[in-house]
Each structure stands twice: as structure tokens, then as C-alpha cells.
Image (cartoon, rainbow, N blue to C red; front, side, top):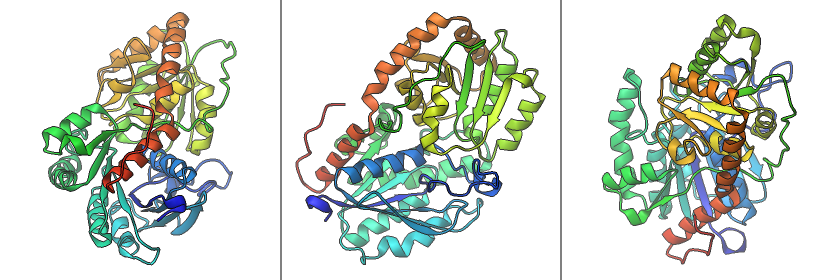
Length: 410
């Protein structure tokens, strides 16, 4: 049992926030090139870390098993009652092997009784198998958070994508039907899982959020000669930052573009930047630790997320907290976060002319940007992580047979 009679949670997640200051380059900025190829920044990394911090503040004990990505194997204490173990092999081609390396510790009872196993599912399906084995070993309830449903959200025509959907979809359905509770980020995924046979009473919709203490940063929006458009996130194929660079180069209005992030698509995106007709107005910045993201957002006038697919897009919530209107793809759960014409503009995925038109529209209309920014701030207040973490703790209590704690309705 945890402090104050609370639960001991075994959290299993393929990715977790990198240790502060880890993997920096020789110049002290960002991550080294090898580590960057492991997609070191993203919504799932931030989600699992923020949830762990908030539950620690509420008095819960947590053991986190995660992959080491491009860094060394290590164990770190987070807060008072959370211990994070990073394991696995240093390779991108067999990243699922982190779960095999984590198996002995996941099944060990040396750290005392485990009350709840909480698996976080992205596109790494090995986590689900590891979570099922751990829950069986410890004889405790299994909770799964679906960060990316491979059966309902993942798209793409590559051989890898087709195999993940085919094989992973079966693993996903089987595991979620057996889980004691399933947490989803959006109502869209909740409806899809109900249609898959997951009992409605086991599904809770709890989105990703923001940490108020981290995002208490004043905006740096002093008048400037031209608006600043930004992209913040992984440079991965799913995110389609390349489309933003292309659309920016075709704009009629004049603005600046800042691309912040790192990942496997870095070289391709930077090559597009160098050959863009607007290259002199585009700047790039590599990986920044999550604690620096609020400052980056505060320096922008609007944020763009042109993803090909997306479960939710947690950076959109963080942008809205920063008072930014957003332009995003009309895919997945994004329309549940971005209300078209109220907090931002939605465009069809992959439609460069539509993306260009949306950017031109917002750059040309300061009054529209201000109205959308006000709507974004109002909508963002529902996404505070301390409140959302309380709802996750309620799920833990429910699966253990207790009455849920009182919390503010979603």
C-alpha cells in the first residue's frame, strides 16, 4: 500500500519524459543526434510523466517501467513515492524488446504488493502483453490507457502500418476486453471501443492535460513586424511537419515560422526548410525539455499541428493554455479539442492548399486571432492535470472495489 493507505501502482509505458538534462549535445543544447532519433519528445512521454507527478503529490506510490530510448539504463526517483526504471536495448528497429528487458522487474514482488497495474498503450503493443502478465502475476486489477488505438486511429499504407493494424488490432481488442478499466483520451475512441465489445461501464474518458505550475509563463507577444507561426513536437512521419513547411512557403501573407522538435524526420524537414522560398523567415530549434515548452509557446502567435493521424494532440491543449489559436488537421480526436471557428481552425489532413489558406486567414486577421485565443484559454481550463489525475485515481479505487473519490465533473 502507498502512503496514507493509497495504492501502489505499477506503471508500464514504452516512453516516458527523458531525465532532465540528459543526452545533451556537446554545445549543451538539445539531445545528441543518436538519442534524438528515438522520438524523445511527444504527448505520451509528457502524459505519463505529468500523471506520475500529480499522483505522487496526492500520496500514491508508483513504480514506473519504461524504455531507455537512446539513453543509458538507469533508475531515478521522482518526487516522494515514485521510482522510474529505464531499461531495454539501444535500437530503433526492435524497440519492443524493452518490454522483454522489463519483464523480470514487472513480475518481481521484491518491492512489495502491487495494487494496480496501469499499462499505457501507444503503437508499442508489447506494453499490453507485459501489462497482462504483470496483472496476472500480482493478482491485481489491470487498467489500460489508450494513447493511440492501432485499430481505430493509426493510418498509413506502409507494410509496417498494415502489420501493426492487423496484428496489433487483435492484441488491442483482446486486452481491452479483459482489462478491468480502460482510459481513453477522447469520446471518439470510447465509442469505437464500445463497438469492439469493451463494456461501456469499464471505459473512462480522461484526456491529456497541462500542469498549471509549468505553464504559468507570461506570453511574450509584444508588437512585432510580423506574426510568428510555430510547430512544437516530434519530427516524425505521423506529424507531417513537412506539410507545414511547404504550406508556409506558399503563403501570400508574410509571417515567420519556428519549427521546434527532433526525431527521425529531422533531416527531411530541415532540407525542406533550406530549399523553401521563405527560408529566410524560417528558423529551426531541436529538442527542448518539456519545462521549456511553455516559454516557446509564449513566444508564438499561433500553433500548427498538421498530423496525418492523432488520438488527441496534447500540445494543442498546451497551446490553448498559452492563449494561442491553433490550426490542426481534422483527424482522430483533434475536433474534440479544437472547436473550429471557436478555438482554432481545422483543415483536411494532407491538404496543403487548405493549410496555406488557413494560415493566410489567421495572419491577415488579428481580430480573428484574438477571438480564437480567448476561446482557447476558456476551453483549456478543463484540462488541468491535478484535476485529471484525481479522476485517474478514482478509476484505481473503482477497480479495487472502493467508492470513487468525489471530484469535479468532467
